[in-house]
Image 1 (cartoon, helix red, strand yellow):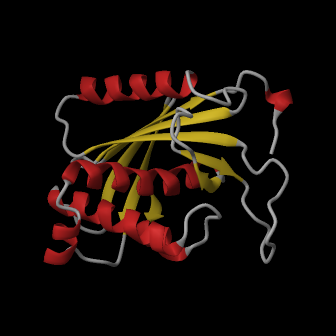
Image 2 (spheres, helix red, strand yellow):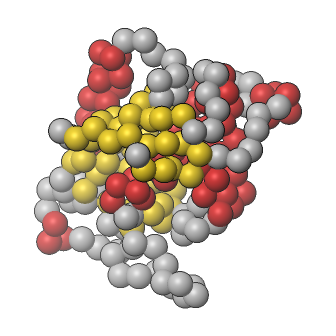
Length: 194
């Protein structure tokens, strides 16, 4: 079983995610996991195309009253927590990292790419290589609802901007926990631009 270390969210290792922003995503994620009675070491099933992979979710922090109060809007906590897990998961599955947050109206949440060269302040060519759209569900009993959400997110990313680039739709459900990942091929790989 592979390990997904959630603490990496606050490392600042992704070009498009500061350590403070990553810490916020981590905190929201931990609130959702604690809400569902999970502790570090819980297994998460990841369904991707025809493969099923299991990851052990590890983290060192804990959830207290202050964290619970900070993330009292569980709908927001679920969305932000899902974004955190998805950013790490896509990196594990593809090697791509978040290079920046996408603007509203693009049909996806994050740009993915190879990131920065170590010690460099400039981007690598083809920094924006793919798109990531994320959705979170705190506790959904029916698999049909999870599959429906994945279809919705797939449709959203297909109808968005930059369809020439590969896209990934990720739906994360916290009570199991379970992630469903769908890869969408770009319409024209020859027209990549940075």
